[in-house]
Image (cartoon, rainbow, N blue to C red; front, side):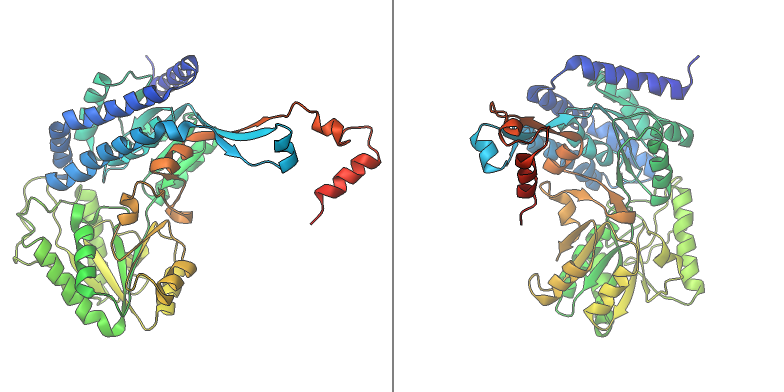
Length: 479
């Protein structure tokens, strides 16, 4: 009887054999596969969303329908319109004489083969099919390993996917940590991992055994810089809308605010008002999502207790004065809280929060805020609220490094399909979305078509070496 590891390896070998047998992957084939993904999501959305909500204890169905179903379908629609253009050979320039004599240079974007995708639990549909859009558009096949923390959704996908795809096209492999570890060791042509940096180190080490290139989407502590000229009510509404959607369980959620000291109390009031406007009730609100499981709920409570024990000022946000003590079985809703000026030793400032907790740190001038960001790991996202043009925003853009930036909003850069999405340093490597995703999952094959004239012979650039060869060498070195 084969082990799970052996079955996965056999499946990967079958995918690679089918890829080679297929030969050139046409635009129509790629579009057909993408449209089947869209059909699968559209036709099975109710059962998928129900399973997802059960995995979380409660997940906002409306928010999940947008982020997990509608957004990837919209991205597929846009991608299908572009595939033929992306697939065309890209011309590259040559020295004028080479081009004059008929030489040509180009790049052809060629499929890699079979790509592995390791999916996290927080957006288990979008973070499977978001990268998959670029993978399929590039002409590849794929194997997906969903999170063991969303077992009901994983079981539904395992049942549904074979109705739309042969396992040699797209396959799903379910299981726990042991299966995930074995999956990461498979000799894919590329591997995508979305999740924690601590796990990414193991994934990257496993992939290195077969020299498999990786795309890592890792998150981090994404800062929000509030300028002195910011519209606080507008900023608060946008910050709390995104921070509290999915109860903060989003890799690019605002992780802390940097606020001018004299605007701190006004910022707190604006955040409280925005939260109450968006979520007037919490525990009984179908729009407000539960923390995914007991483990993560306990982790967030440890963060709260660590800050309270150190005397950090805490502002609770509970507009309806609800009790969170007696929740339905499997549900772990958590009250949003603001923490004011916690020091860097506190848990809330050391690790990515991934929950409805938000620290606020004060600064005296924007240079101090920038220095604070730069003393820490480079984040996946950075947000700035203030004048969109001018010296201050340009200073923030020039002096900080992050995966992406949104000015006067939260996460809009990630929702823009024409921009690459990815991290830098500890927040990740590699990108996907649109053309950049297509190229990420392609091999950029350089092709040089030599002129009919033997250029090397004409210019004396072959042995035996002599004056003509040495003169040619000197021409290469001219300024």
